[in-house]
Length: 176
Image: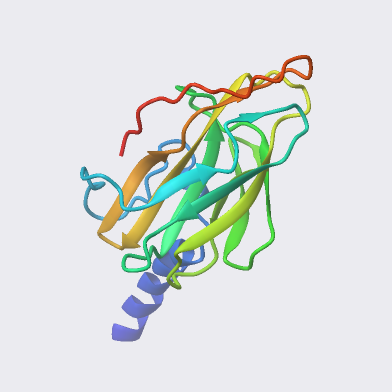
């Protein structure tokens, strides 16, 4: 009987540990026991730029202080206030995997294991149609099974027309 119970419990923990969290795409919650932290997240989502051009790659970083690494994450790009992912991601590290969210491939990035992480870098590409005018990267970070933050946001990036050189963007307050 004990072996059967262990067999039933292990696959559930393994799925989340492997980053296969597509069921979290909509609300970005890891669906662990407990509630998201309400304190300011020690983790950040940032980009190297404040604007983007159609077809231009955007480097996105998830960062943690060395003293407080994270074990898991889920990253999406959304229009500010939007409810679905936009654009697509590319990964070059074995610590990150691409996910399909909202029935679109490569629209989210997650972890591949529960090893500790202090920095994840990925590349985001806007949709080729060019209809995204502003984008904000949102992440959930898991420090431990019961300690996690949902909806950690980057500053907003604005589309820059090729005819203009202004690269300013509007930032919205972060909801941690």
